[in-house]
Image: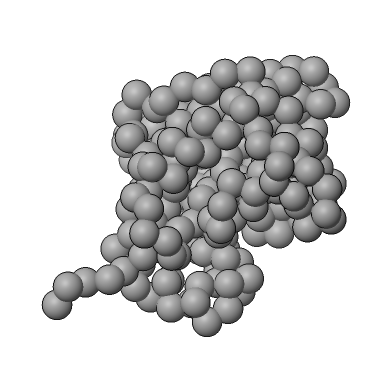
Length: 224
């Protein structure tokens, strides 16, 4: 008999999850495991931010895509089905699911150039890519910072306030004012200081849609 089949440790479901594919038994467990792995990935990115910063400076679009692709590859290595630029009512930046796509999460990665740019990303996430159906009622905004002197926490707080009271004076690429409806509410993450959640009524399903906002600071300006 194959020794791996008789290994008693493989009877432990948690070990099987780590060794092959993530296999959550509920949507909440899916999100809990996923956010843990996303945060691990962010920690790894932050340890080489000087390298990624150069890519963002050389070519913003390609640099942004590279980071999105890296996140997908890291999550795939952790046992998720993760794809970059997968078609879900458009080419979504980060799409994570379980086998057979029972549970799904969509992430939108954006280089921060102001709240107007993030507003565009939110509209793409909620109004274009997401279906808002059962077990597909959560997504994420991955906010990449490459310049500006403002502290990351201040940027995130400004964005949080914007979601509650969108600025109609901000004009989008089409020359029109923002149309993102205000969030139903926002909540700080109890575990991470540079993370918060916003809650929205999904425009098509009518179900509550939750967005996890996390900022990744790639600025690197050592004093020596």
